[in-house]
Length: 400
Image (cartoon, rainbow, N blue to C red; front, side, top):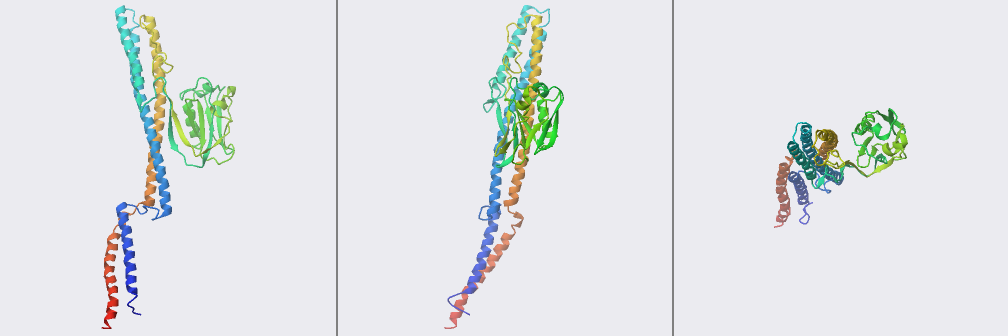
């Protein structure tokens, strides 16, 4: 039927033209932004997933920044330790020189002056070893808790934390058996959900750091251990444990005075780890002279090199200080290496997550050739709309 009131042909032509323009706008928007899903309007489900992963990326970036700051603080401390180590070697050289019996009083006084000047430099270096206001090697410094990873909410595993050991807290290089009073070679057995998943042999030479490494190795990574040198406590985490009671237990040791409970956490009930974060603590040291740290034996007594005998004593004290300093430097180096490993992991993880987001929302720009095609279709349909609009005029001309 022909009508001058309703032009259905024009409606059809306009619908097709609008559809073509919509496709053209969509393709042009993808080319301009690079996204096929740029808002919830494009694809609500995919957009929600992508936004959640972007939030995770931001969290990972913040954790990485914190690790970078901690690494820088350790690097400054290591630089200070290396400089102090060289000074100690020079001081020992002075002390050895002062052991000669043929030195005059004036010569000994000159050696003593050099010795005192070197000793004064140690405190200056230790007190200046700051990064972002943090000093890990000065007397009265503070330990540095470092966020290693941000765990998702929900039950993420089971954790056991020991109560610590009273008295002299052993460092990472201390022998574990001597620290907690083992009578002989023993084993620590780790049980997950009632099944043994690995044992660690406690020998006379196993250090605290070695024990930490063995926990992860012997359990195939199913249980990880951390040690807080500030409090002398171990923390064990089993990420796969299900919610319940005592999925993670530690058994099979024979330690004097109940230290297995206080120090290793044996017999302590496991607790759920929910929505928490994994942290490690960088322990502060004391590289100043005359303090309680590695250089405690470096005496500041007047006329220390006044006799060959006193110079011999000073030389022995300096040797002890050099050994103690090297041990603590090794501890700092191990902590720095652990931070580097975690930093590399977080960097790789961030790259992988970002790639996954791209797979979800990025446009395939190789398909941008569709834009000219859509434009050609729109150009072709505009004349069709013009022809359709002429139909009522043609009909009316019949009545002229």
